[in-house]
Image 1 (cartoon, rainbow, N blue to C red):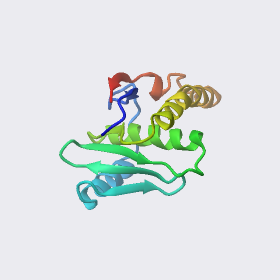
Image 2: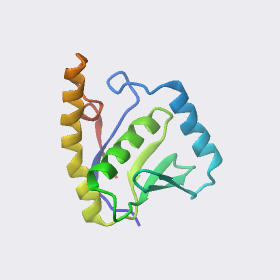
Image 3: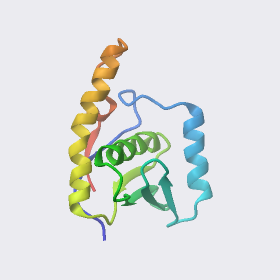
Length: 137
């Protein structure tokens, strides 16, 4: 059973900058190597995803209790951004609703930090996370 919640899913378009080709190839290799319903975790945060090959979806299934919510949110949204460019979605799976809500709450502050970093580098202030289509998970 999945936690039903609204969150924003990145779209692979001009408003959402494309990652380097080597990053996209790594992601393609990952989903090819891991079996359907297999798990993959991001080492720094222990954010764990279940790979649903027919649905082309990574389901967030676990986050280590010692992982700060800010780090978990950063890894979740970065994963969603990159995998969107290879045609995959990233969604909240069977996790505690309060964890999903805490991760979503961090999104606005991550947007702000991304905007400040772009402005400091004289880049466009439009964050990839602010230019994404709402979706129901």
